[in-house]
Length: 277
Image 1 (cartoon, one colour):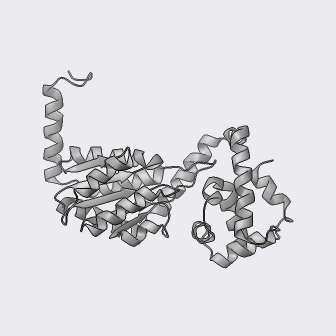
Image 2 (cartoon, helix red, strand yellow):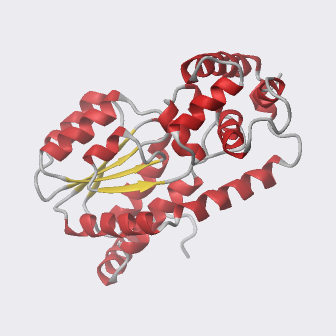
Image 3 (cartoon, helix red, strand yellow):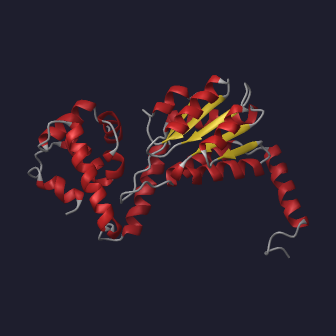
């Protein structure tokens, strides 16, 4: 039985009401996220208040959110083990995924996010150097930001890998430097601790995450919140990459164009590209 069918079986059709249905939608659309989230985090994702999440759990036959989350987690893990989630939606998953990504990108373009994107780009431009840290799925957008930002002439370094290696990089940060932390879904203690230490060392901190209520927001000078909803269990990083591209677009100026030209000239001199004439 799918998680959606399980939830539907615990109540009669239409009995939940529109607000509770939004909570249920988060539960079956993002079960991995919901399985490890607080009621507050689920409420934020659903666009409702915390009491609605609690009432929804009770309407579904549980004492409260912790009890519903425990059962949801067990069913989610069982579905992963059985391969149930790999089947995906029955009708045209590719088209559904593209539509979901388009929705995520549209939701990204809020005034607050646009302001934070521009402020992050200004911080990178003004910084002596910029360090990008991440873990797990966030490594993809982190690679794109650090690589293309460096091609544009900015001193941007990427610190992934072990916690000890990342700590070495963060320990070198000083006032006038910039840290960009990219986090997707579950937050590790390492990423939270390194972000806090960078703030304490006087660096300007920008955070790119999928949750406005993330503990990382406490240390952020600039906070960019991106939706990561997919059509199956895992997140979609399309909107997060779009946010990275938006930051990079703000870094594009005459100096960046010249720096990029110099890099491409070096590639040509080294005969690195197979498509050169």
